[in-house]
Length: 333
Image (cartoon, rainbow, N blue to C red; front, side, top):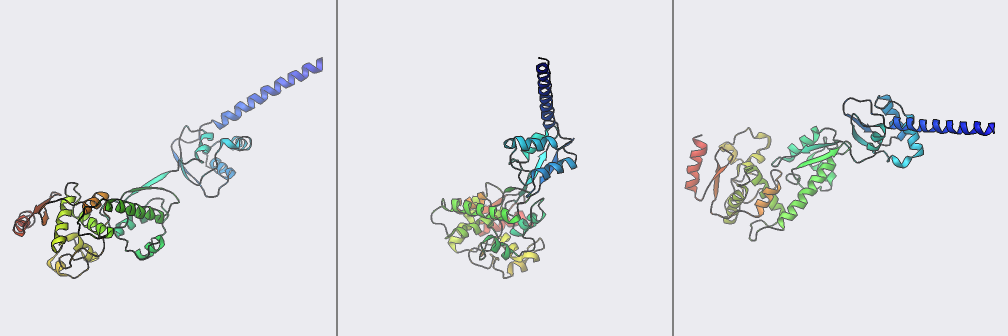
């Protein structure tokens, strides 16, 4: 009888000790991280669970490792497999929550914005300067970049859609370029399918060229289709486009901020004061609004326009009206 009492007492003590141990273990798992401000922690590619837990302890982010290692051993299903990447650990988060986060899709992301009207050279400079973006193209020529993307025979200007792109550490500039290229292709195809009949544009690429001219001429929503109408009517009548942004693009590094008479006489493939029709390639990256304007130009009779200096333009039907507008808005200013 005495032995039975002893066994019962021991069993109770063991149960109490086990329960206390379990509660202590759970308390350690729920213990808040030892950080006072958000910390970006990177899980290296190929790192094991024990390596990551040990690193967190060495950095003082968690107080100990045994509770997490035990959890991994007895309840591995409660912890997802770790993902390589950066994660934002926040104050008040528990050690258990931190390990769950490190196996989630909540990777720290960054953004890169390519404005409408930028050139490919400007886009490349932005990619080269982007935070945490793996740069694989800095030493490549434009032609090498296009070959790497799988389009070795294409000129890059205008073929990438201007937008804000999100990425995480480990993503390369080639991946973002591929996204922007495919986005432009899909957008151009969609817009081209809804084009007006009778346009002097025969291919989607010509529409892309036209859209780039429109994009560089104006950023005003209410003017894109008007400018598209002027360009469309001039092409239809066999008139030269005479658009300064194309001339500037053709001058390249020789452009000093002002177009001279000599510049307008310089023979380049982009001098629309000398060449017939469209320039050979786009001169910038147009947005969707410019693409839509290129294939759905506004009706009217205007054949000329000049910048008024306030972001808008004066449209004219005759050369005399246009010359008067030039004197008013350009020469007098």
